[in-house]
Each structure stands twice: as C-alpha cells, then as structure tokens.
Image 1: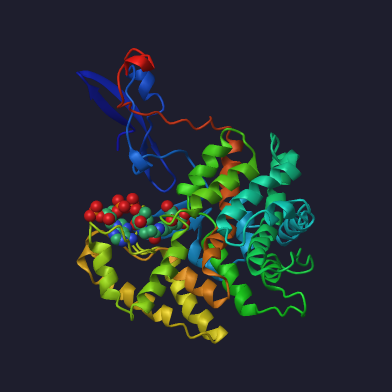
Image 2 (image 1 turned 60 degrees about the vertical axis):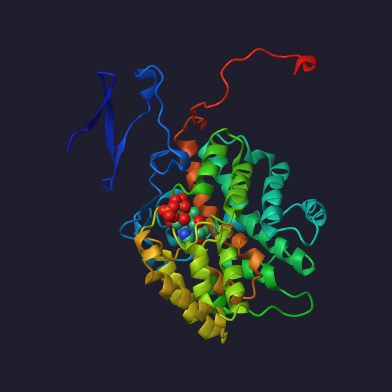
Length: 428
Ligand code: SDX
C-alpha cells in the first residue's frame, strides 16, 4: 500500500503524504497543499470527508458500530466502570488506580462551591428560559470567578481548571433545574459519590430528607458514560476550535454547550420525546410520521434516527434501549411512549427509505425515555447530555492544548462580487 497520493494539476504532479492511524484508517495529508500548488485548497461543507486533527481519545467505526474510549469498548465501560473512572480515563488516558480515583474525586470536591454572585445571573433569567441557554451562560460566567482557569500553560494549571469545571458543572446543572422548579439552590453533599450528589442536588426537597435511589444512580451513571465522548462531533469540534484561540476552558465548554443545543445534535433527545408525544397524541399513528419523515417537501425528520458516522446501529442506542426496559421496570414506570418508540424503530428498520440510507436509531432515540422515568423534564434532556459529554470535551481540549495545535482557521472559496467602485448614495 503506497504511502503517497498523487495529484495531477494541469500536467504538474504533486505528491501528498498518506498517514495511517493505529486502527488502519488512512488520511491524505493536505497540510502543505495550498503552498505547494500555489493556492489550491479543498472544499468539504460539513467536513464529511475532512479530518481536523489526530487524536488518541476515542475510536469509532461507523460501518461496524464500534465505539472505544482510549481502547476500551463502550459495552465494557458501561457495564463495569463508573462515570468518574471514565472521566479520568478520557482525560488522562489510563483507567485510574484506586488511589488516583480517590485523589481525583477529592480534588474535585474541594472546588464544588459556586460563587454566590452566580446566583444573581441565574435570577436574571425568566423561568421560561431554555436550560441549555442558562447552562451555557453560567458556564461562561464561571470564568469571571475563576480567572486562573484562562491562561493555562502547564499541565498543573490545566489540571486545576479541569477539576474546577468538573466540580462546578453539576451544581450549575442542578441550579438550572431548581430554577425551573422554583426550588432553593443547593450545594449537595461532599460525603457521597459524584453521580449520587448530582441527583441529590437536582431533586432534594427543602422540607424532607433525601432518599437515594440506587436504580436512578446506576441508570444515570451508565447514561453519562455512554455520552462521555464521541470524537470530532459538532460540539467537540466547537470546543477544540474555540480552545485553539486560548480563550480558556470554561469559555470553550460554554461554546460546546451552545453547539450541542441544536436539534440536529444533542437537542435531538428533547426533539425525540416531543415527536413521540405528538405521535401518542395522534393516537399512536406512527405511519403518518414515517410518511412525513420520507416526504422531501416536509422538513420533519425522524428525530433520534440517522447519524453522520454510524451507518449501522449506534452501539450506545443498543445499550440504552436495553437499559430503558430495565430502569422503567425497576422504577415501576409503565410508559406507553416506550412502546411507541419500539414500534417506530421496528417500522423504520423494515422501511426501504431508512434501510437504503442506513438510518438507524442513535444515542438520542431512547435516552429521553429513561430521563423522563427519572423525573427529569424534557427540556433538561440535553443538559444531561452536556453533563455526560463534559469529560470528553475536557479531554479533547487538553489534547489540543498539550499538542500546542495552531489556531483553527479554515479557508473558503469566495463566490461573491468581484471588485467594484464605491457609488455615492446620490447616484444609487
Ligand atoms: C448526535 O456526530 C456525532 O457523533 C453526534 C452524536 C454525539 O455523540 O456527539 O452522536 C450525537 O448528534 C446524534 C444525532 C442526533 N440527531 C438526530 O437524531 C436528528 C435526526 N437525524 C438527522 O438530522 C441526520 O441523520 C443527522 C444530522 C444526524 C446526520 O445527517 P447527515 O449525516 O448530514 O445526513 P444527511 O442529512 O445528508 O442525510 C442523508 C439522507 C438524506 O436523504 P437524501 O437527500 O439522501 O434523500 O438521509 C436522510 C436525509 O434527508 N435523513 C433522514 C434522517 N436523517 C437523514 N430522513 C429522515 N429522518 C432522519 N432522521
């Protein structure tokens, strides 16, 4: 197999090196294309064929439905690891020893207080504000209260910023929910686990003892693991490009939250539940919605279906679907929405429109059903996605900074007006 590609431009031949990844993926390196060819660039809207970086964090094979974090299979991590272990693995590259995990959690817990003035920013939002907009704003605002998190050159500086955002983010998630519910803001409990504390901050009622629910803790731990990273998706690419200007970790994460909000990306988990609710209200008429999804004149898409990379089952969707049955059973929740989702999936997987386009359920198709069973409001689903994706965003930001990658600045092909002389307004 050649380690070079050849480009013939008007009879002039150019050699382009070929790079090979550890999983035998192949890339044509065009880093010097423009200078070598006196100005040629490539064009690839949506970067469907373009790699933005080399990365050692997550590997996925869309054809085979494979997903691994630092070489470990998602199926094993979801079954055997905790979310904090997976966060450590993604960020630092290895599964932690018991001592390393204890120190990591201790360092995180030492920064779980959010400055009281942040509450004034939260108070300024109307109750109707979408939680993703609130979360993005509060995350960016954290920079003002943690200025040392911006100019990070050493690994220690980066570590200090990382444990701060891992500590304060669950507090912001809980405050965003409690603001919606008109509940007093809570700082949780340093004596319990990371996911346990997150649930307690979200749901503790001010006038009663909080009772832990192991089913909910295990379910959320697994969901957060499944959402933790997914290589160069839209929001992660956003975090990397904002981080490449050295804008600081919290600002980069805030930008990632905004990108994740969109219904074509993380916002799909909310859109799936709204779609399933509409089908239920329509008497469960899935055929009508299948027809809408296939109708090119109708902007409606089957939310939770299809994926830029997976052209096979999203391995996360398989695990979440199984978990949905288990969790709803253990919580004693009988939700007809789950049956509608399964019916829709069955119909789509037997329909040539979806089969021909390799459209399968993705991570967002079933996750909202579990969140709902846990008592999480629909417009908080994407906030839960962000909570899971946080360690992946951090890991990708840290990799980009440690590798001292250049500021991201794509080129373009200009298609506008050529030079024309200015005309004074009297003569227009
Ligand atoms: C996430 O990138 C990641 O890794 C993301 C993510 C992560 O972990 O970070 O996995 C999380 O964002 C999952 C995706 C969540 N989004 C949705 O569920 C929204 C519904 N899905 C689609 O909008 C769509 O499938 C995308 C956006 C996910 C992918 O779109 P692509 O790769 O740009 O594909 P496309 O729009 O070019 O579609 C190809 C064809 C088109 O039809 P034709 O023009 O060939 O006739 O498939 C059709 C599309 O119209 N199509 C759909 C469809 N998805 C694609 N038709 C109906 N319903 C759908 N859901």
